[in-house]
Length: 220
Image 1 (cartoon, helix red, strand yellow):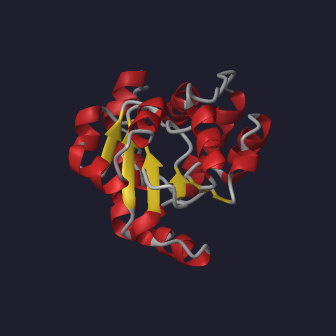
Image 2 (cartoon, helix red, strand yellow):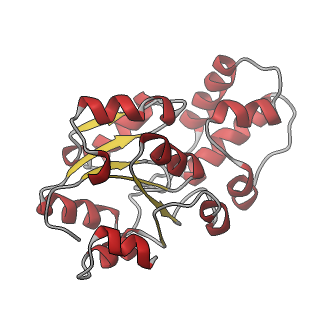
Image 3 (tube, rainbow, N blue to C red):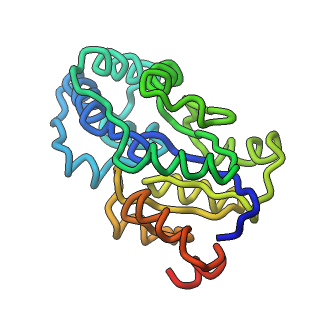
């Protein structure tokens, strides 16, 4: 990959941290309030989607999003599930920092909970800016690109869900789908990310080869 600087926008949940157990727990707390069936991890991966407003409208129809978010925050606070940094994530961020690349976060996660996590996990220093609590990332990607003077052809969005890849398409930037989070391979493949990686170590190995990003995209 070229030695010129690149801009990287990261999703948070399922991309840099493993918070699925916590999110499933909080989601089931919401479902219990309305007498709805609870989810196991794999069923949740199969059905959960962003923006989450549409997900809840399908499974808890007619309930105001503000009410659902309140119950979700209650479940989040009650849960004892821990949120670790995903394997290889810290090393990958270190690698990009050594390259001199710029890094950002764009996440739908509650802003308060996100800030607590990013600080407690010691990752905050990697990111030039952090955008959390974004319901529909497609609505913010253009503004973020413009605000930070990014060049679309040298910007990469990394995420684990179709919404992340669709956000990259919407912003006209490259996309990486990683298989460490909420969507399965066949689901991510269907939205055509520029590159699909098993995890961030897999992505780093691709980048450290002698090929350019354009050649990498063509090869994958």
